[in-house]
Image (cartoon, rainbow, N blue to C red):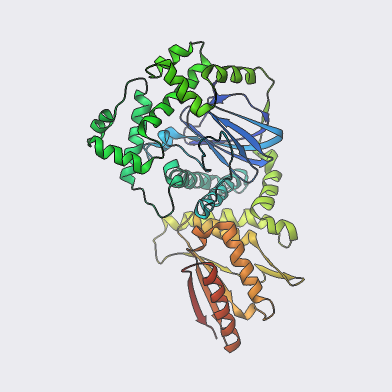
Length: 469
């Protein structure tokens, strides 16, 4: 069991590896956050005391200095995106001490699934983040010369989303709650202090002095932000630190307990068992037994999985397209890269009015009716939604009644709205503008009915009606 060093080039603060995995050894990374995305098959990640089933179509964060291993009952193909925290520390000062997570932790449950999230806002964050990962991969595999210049921009958007939406404190809070940057910075300073002084006796008075606040204020501050008491968090960090000594040295349990700041070995046993569900010695034996087995894990080139990435896009991101095969996929990769290139150029040009990405929903390029069943060109729609979410462009949905027919338009609009909420989540859809055009009395009735469908499904939707001649 050892630290696995990740090599970053001087001007590239990330690296992408593709691994074919059956069973990987136990290891960890220093000053690195790893984002893993299974693109074929499911995997089981063991990270410290947790076992997480990461399903194809989802992703997972392996945090800085987290001891982990990965295995798969069937051989899985996994994209591993390694982030150099030293590089991003200037922009996000406490990024090394942030804990990133995209599923819910249930106390007392060691094994969980990566998609055990019910909150629609959090689901929206996850969908958007997965699309950002795919944007990075598309830039990485693209043969277009423009894509190399866009890759860093895509990565910065990814890291910014990771910090703002998947920092555990942010992800844990209810959508109606607000955590100020001042509170976040204080919390992370305290976590940093624990990391640096966990071997010592740390009291509430010590923290209060460090932060120039009273003990009473600190107690309320911590209670408002954390689901664990300060003492619980301190002992949690000590237990995690002890795992390094358990797995990399022959130190006795008593010496490890003393080294990690526990006043007595019995307290070490108590807190270790609380999190790991076993004694320190049992955990050491279990990990040593795992490492005695054979490992089957090797790297692939990005170029070798290009077809797999296209299949993943069809299956996970564009499932409706994969079922009916109405539109071509090559357009997706070409146009998305070019749109991002134009946006990059637009950012350095003199700014005029706000920019808008517009979808003419019922045009022949975006909509077809087959056997009285509506089909939408989700490859086009996904491109623009993803683009608007990662740029400063507003998202406009234009619905022209001139394209519609009485016997199917309500079903088509209802289907579109429901699928958008499912694909992008309400947190994204509620930001859109809906422009409904009509030109006579019949189309006016259609426009009103369309507006009713939208407003019934999307509270406070921004709907605008236009008369065209």
